[in-house]
Amino acid sequence: MNLTGILTEFKTEKNITRPVLQSILEDVLRNIIEKKYGKSDNFDIIINDKSGDVEIYKNKIVVPDCEVEDVESQISISDAKNIQDDLEIGEEVAEKINFNEFGYRSMLVAKQLLLQKIVEQEKIEMYKKYQKLIGSLITVTITKINKNDLLVIDANSNILQISKKELNPSDRYYVGNDLLVLVEKMEYIKNNPIVTLTRNTEEFVENLLHDEIPEVEDGIVVIKNIIREIGYRTIIIAESYDSRKDACGTIIGKGGCHIKNIQREIGYERIDIVEYSKNKEVQLKRCLKDFDIEDIKTIDNNIEIYVKQSDISSLLKNNYLDLLAELVEAKIEVYAI
Image 1 (cartoon, rainbow, N blue to C red):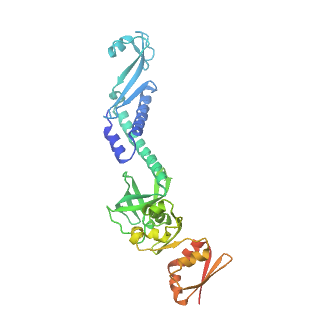
Image 2: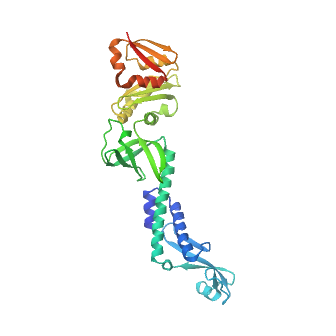
Image 3: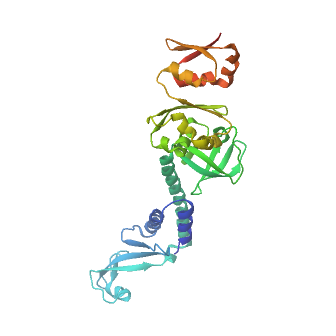
């Protein structure tokens, strides 16, 4: 029996290691052995790692002629010497089993069971892989575009889905194109591993920053907060722990080299990079540096912003105030003066 084709296919395409596949095969073979012989503990299954050849041996104890009480576990000395002529009574002999003894139907069932178990193991391996990847960026390739989602494959040919709701409004996608995505969640639903991929979360942007900017990855510049209004604006709050490094300038990069790569992934969203402050009023003033702000007052947990009438419409545009309220965790009211 040779299962090289099956083993190789699933080893390369489904990312299941050969030792795991061999273990699955042995379990399946022991299953059909037990069905035919009632037990499998005196059987050895040998799988050639290189060729994929499989051999089964039944181990029997050599007993005197005419004293065989159990043909499944004992063999007469005369029959044993036909296998190996130097055997003695009490020794063990391995008798090779011909797969034809199991019959065509049993072998067909074994193959179906093997494929079923391999598929189940593939699900387990995929689940374990993506559990470790939660919160990480991966590159996938688009294979099909549906009405509500995209079908994509990862580096191990696992087929995944990403909802169009998880994409950026400016994303352009075509079959065959690569897509950088964040692994947001991994669940088991109805015995199937379901991976949630996204491109429109704050965590996606933070991962981009870590991948793109060495100072962020090394903790020299720390991302304190990110607030996004998908398709409109991303606010990045950052703090430098090195007096020689400006947080905003480091994120932008020389000639805008870093921020251009970030911008390429999130499209036409405006990116505001703001230096961090513990003081909410100072933080808001830094975020609102492009507006003509007359005053900011804090009353209890409410913040009042006094702005020139000419800036009111811009300030209220695209839920910008909601983003700022989320940032400082306070209710914000705006007054024109």
